Length: 185
Image (cartoon, rainbow, N blue to C red):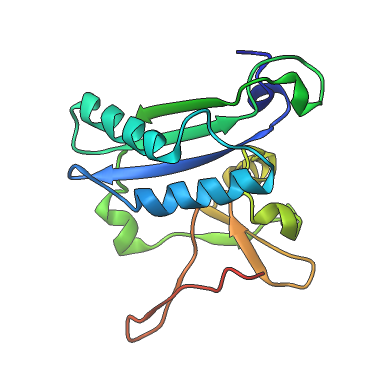
């Protein structure tokens, strides 16, 4: 609905979850992060989290495919076009499934390009909330396309790597050891 604050105010949180070969990737961890993000903006789903989990799994079974992505959106809900959360008597929950196409093997053989985007990192208090406000991420991706690069990476005011437009970043050393950055900055 147009009057859902999720739509016209960006007042909501989301998760994207992948399933491959019929197995869902870290669903409980994604839902836990979504719950933390919701708590940060005083937002809970209109049903228990266990029911959200079952809705997601039920949708995947109904798709009848081995591979796909879920988009789970939790919003303030419909109720008005103002800014006050009190306009929305009940939160909204949307769960959608859509197709997923893995990257071709050539990507892993030739590698990808990345660059330091001109778009600044989100403020740290917002970076810990997976909100639906992805405008900076959209602008980063737009800049990447304009520059003919695969992945933009933004940095904070102190020069620390912050995030990609939609990608997770990890470092792999010459021996193949994967290092995932701390998520404390």
